[in-house]
Image (cartoon, rainbow, N blue to C red; front, side, top):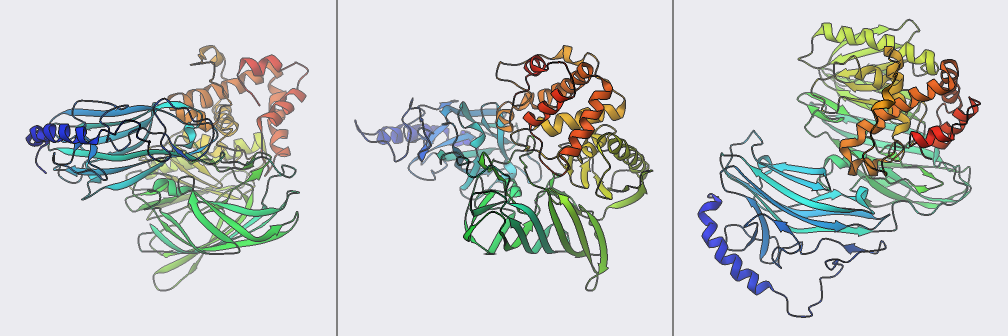
Length: 623
């Protein structure tokens, strides 16, 4: 389109006329489920908490820069009604904003949605102009001139992490001095529903379904970015209450657009009746044909398609190199808190799984290496293809990569095989250095926490990873970093072998892995607690990802830094020998199980005659 400046005069006149026509008559009822300005919703009845999301009533209660609310006839058109929000479009350095305060009731599921039309004259290939969407101080989505489209596209974002909070919802468009880009918004909504993601506790609170066994057969295209096949999972109900349904977590649908474009597709479900996707398209309820009593088993199976998006991510591809973390649907956990259906977080991890067995068969072009969780055996496939069969026992999830990786292998002195893969742009000498580091670290961690049980570990190096490193059982993604790799390998114990609910108790793996990394590197942490400075009375080491997603700038400082400092302090209180024995015996007693803060505090207290009550209070470790 032409520069917005050319349409400005027309836009002002049309907007004034349109706004006058749009004024509702006195005593007009609000739209169904809309929250009146100033209304506080106190339950999880279905409701919509954004006011004037279609901009039909002008700017109120939005706070906007000049000229943002526009009308049909000004150069753009509404998705519905006659008005919309038009950010940027001037073809010069400019920033437009639109924001309003919203209150989400506690314990509810929430979804932010809006219709977005991106109109640009920029050349393709570079993101010059950007639209940033925030909840509170957290960026929940970004778009750019690269998202240009001919019409409106509905965007949906899970906002359940903000339940129980009053936050500012904001849209900010920033345009450079080159060609124009218009970000046109309409029909903004923030829908809340449900009684929370976890129903009241039932049965005896045992974690179920357990004894999970996954069998997966997938075939890739030539690039290794698209996979199709079949998955089945057998399981047993271990709780005293009958098990009427299970939930599949399709975690990587968080990387798509719900519900129109999801990279993980489950179809033809057998062994139960599938319901529509929920929790930002990351959860699928499967109702069983009849309830399972305690000790009874069942199997759910389905066809599966995976499309890896672009990006050097834990699920993404960096050019020819594909990374498939959390790509396989897995069973959610039900325990004393009910079903764990937490939203995906990009800030940390949401994952909570029970130790399971996997047999995964991957049919792929022979030109692609396929490092994976577990122990792999390659056999010839059809012409030009290889079948990699990976088996793994007592692992919480399964991940793999696919690409023309370079590879080196070595065996640690204690007999653990380490395979180091790397992408182009990383030197073999750097890979060799990381391989030597890995064999050293894996044995050091084994000596402290118990022998590594999985036989081998695969690591992939890519310096484009924005997240630094990411752990999966027997499989890690990492930068070339002498600090990050020992940390990710420590996660083989802290979360991999000794599991935890990563969404609600992230400190139990991150702080412990960082503490283990310090031990490996010979760092005592002396005096590190002296630098602790809390941002608020609500800030605690033991806060959940719901809190940290709303306070993302403090996540690593508190959970990683303060968390490991607290463990260093605990070591000084109870003594070096007692601390070493505590961690080794605690890992042994939770081997392939689940750790909780309460259980660790109990074990720590048993390791010393010193009353630790004030210690937990001082270090803000609750639970």
